[in-house]
Image (cartoon, rainbow over all chains, first blue to last red):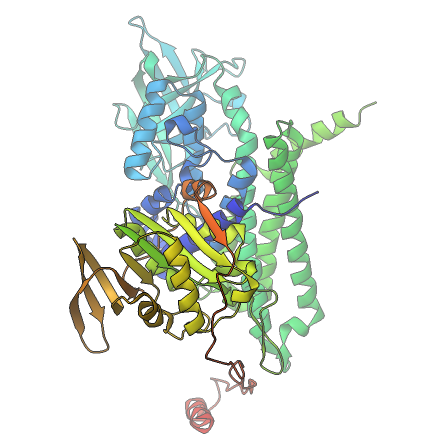
Length: 384
Length: 247
């Protein structure tokens, strides 16, 4: 079993280090959390370095990369920048458009990305009454006599929904009742009459704006459909597994940053005449933090490797999301414990990392729904 | 225009360990492009029609990652002499060995160097290389513009900026302001492995004129761990007195 990185992977990580060192200065990060956005300069530099093009098909200007390499890039990006920014999540909607979009949608999305560095669309999936319980979704499109469709409904937790020019909406076909499992994906322009947004305020991840999106009889045409009619949720599900793994890559990068901060602080902090790293209770905290980070990393890269090999990962990706997001959050919690009172101030970044990482326990599916997905798989795996 | 950019492979300073007797242990340090040379590499990539990276060193510099790293930074090809006979050369011998590598790289209009190496920072190779090649040398170049067979160079000196014009070919060493190094993207990194890399041994023996007698890290003072409680009366005065006493 070879855990060594290739030359190219090592050089990629060094480039990510250079990128983060140059652009994510302390002042810039502070400004991002105050203004709830990211400077265009960083987004453009990220595009120019090609990080956001990794995994997008070459024929559209993308760069071939396996999932392990993309995971390595994401982990390092969040480790070295030390904040929960939007850069990687930007790619998720681009992947969906590249996989399910029409030729015209793909071309427009790439032109927009290459021109601005921002993805063309946000993702409108969750609703106030329907998250993982997707059958309860009530957003619906109804076909009109003139061949157009009317979209009605409300979506929530739409990351960058009020900033990006389009949103990808999953909506039921014709009938909003829970009996109907037929859903489709639509690429909706945010300035279409009937589309409006309302901001939502978070307790963490404040540099990533998100909002509610309302659709009030929004007229859609057939050209706005993505993929086959009725298969909308199955299409999104297809990408959920890799998205969960990438969220864990972000989370383990942030956990590594928290661990390093805590260990450095513990080496410097003098109590009872000696650095607190000589106190066994602090040693236990640091040891367990390292175990959690290494365990998560091992699960992450094994899962990504399995995906690259074309193996099914329904169980592995759910276990990874459940274990990785919660245990990495626990690393941030333990780091806060090491800092004690100082960690609860805004003088150091650990409190910010702690709040940011708590959010990743919800994004991409909650801790509990992961147990629901994985538990059934485990039962099936060992059934006689 | 073809430009040769000289760079040095140095131990990554993050991996250098200082022993108790202040000697430096390089055994765990990976080789990396000397930090200041990255500015010369970037300027070369921007100015040249064909930029050739050149270097000399021990056989360990024939390292696939190091070679791809320099080629991912805008260099069209790489010429290196990697031979244990070339390990740890002084500036005099390095300049002579580099002159031989540059001769093999083909005709070049300019040789760019960094401000100094990240390990020794002797700032000697540029001038001694120019002497070997019989070319003029311009140091401290903060801006370089080429027009035909001449280069107009702005030199950043301590108290002024000096603009000079030099006939090419010439050796030019640049300050960190000359060009901000690019961040190699995945495309650059993937393309680097496909670019030409010419690796040769030592062409001869090169005379060393400098012997390093000793190389020690600066002395470290132990922390006194004197803590002044801000709540105590006269805490500021106590702190000021402690600082004065330490100075």
